[in-house]
Image (tube, rainbow, N blue to C red; front, side, top):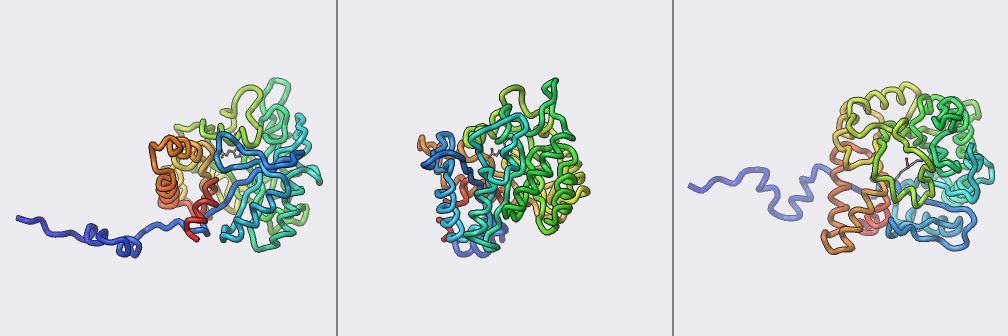
Length: 325
Ligand code: PBG
């Protein structure tokens, strides 16, 4: 006896049917492009572990962002690489610091037509590469770090950042930044909290791009432990209580369960960071001809959206936008 056709399969028969009934769509509106801008270079420098990603000059950054905006990408997030680093990360909130210059340029170029986000952290600016102020024992001084984060967020907002995104996983960072922004009159600048940021082995290529590998130790005492999922909800709850406007899960693919449970628990927008290692792995395998890199990227980004993310920070943003155009 022939088994009768069943509905799900009948609806898979043609590309048009599949398109019609797709539950998840990744569109250009979902994309945030992470970009690096470096002080003191005259030409953009490729990042070897991230094919297609550059450390930009101020000029090449402006050009790249013009192209991204032209493709309809709604947002970028900027990371600064300063020429000089010190223990307190002074360049992070200097008015003429590399990121502040970039923010002013992009704000001049795009006004309110583009969401320009700033990563608010210290590791790119400290000589020891940690995300905070280090005390005499080598531990992070949480409260001294909060003062720095507040000052950095104010400098970034003053330079034109439309969203600040604290990524250091310090306790109280969202409250400290919200308070500092409000005191400085930046009440309309939202905080995108990297709430569930794991101490992941997938950040290696980023640390090449941002030149921020820790000089000693690791980040396990402040970033989350990969086995923990319930704890992510606690971190998200704390950040929302402190005034976060949006929350983030990072990395994305190894933490789809976390994205999904955060989605069930809260109604604020959720960002997912498809991080450097996730990007590099796909390109490395594709380069060897072992996988179809573009197809895998699209599948990965769809899975991140399907898990519940509202937007995705991804180094693949430009390539996907070009395919969707
Ligand atoms: C820290 C920061 C990191 C990333 C974004 N912000 C690195 C880290 O925590 O070591 C990683 C992003 C990526 O891997 O793409 N400011």
